[in-house]
Length: 286
Image (cartoon, rainbow, N blue to C red; front, side):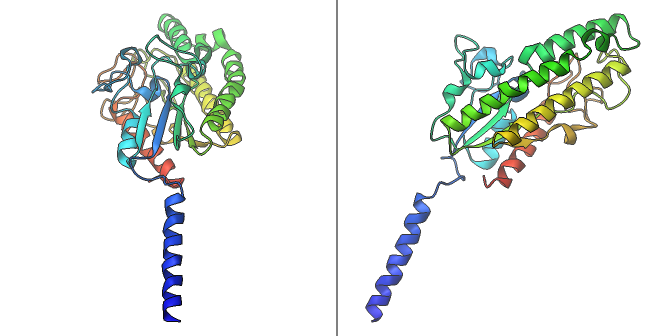
């Protein structure tokens, strides 16, 4: 009788251990994590550069995916690249930067996605045009007059493209937990700091509204396509490019720290990493 009970206990313990061994773990350096995205993910000019990354991608070893992977003990493959659009997930951006989707596999367990700002020339073309207009005519809303509803239409049209990318991630990496990382607050919530950021008060408000629409689109597509949205905009309010060097998380037109123009600096990237880490921990990744 005792022997039977002992054998039963041993069998129960062995069975439990086998079940634990078979269950997928989301802790430790063996967990494959793939980071996809553009320059707001790759962290151009934030030192030091990431070893092994294509030089033209300007990827930092202290971008939020590197910092988050280190904090959570994940095995990172970072293919984020400055200038990337959603199309570069499936097509090569440079000769040494193949499609970012190539980094995914059926064993990938964690994926972060930071994309959309470059689609349809949304950030770069708009900032160049609006900055030039407002520098010459620093009153009224010349940028809004030029673009009107065009930017909102571009954002809306890009929604299905981002959604299709998220669906593809799930198809290639069906067991992966996917995190869509939004864009931080770039401009002040009121007023302006012309010419540090050469935008009028009216155009600052206009472009703030466009960024909020972009983040809202990303949040909606994440929700629709089984991903977790990471809001970096709300926590970064009050740390925009118009603030002092000690306060801001985004650099102005002429950066004063190791960062690219109108992009997160080292402090901003570290704060983004904390938000990404918190979102991942909330989903059982630790």
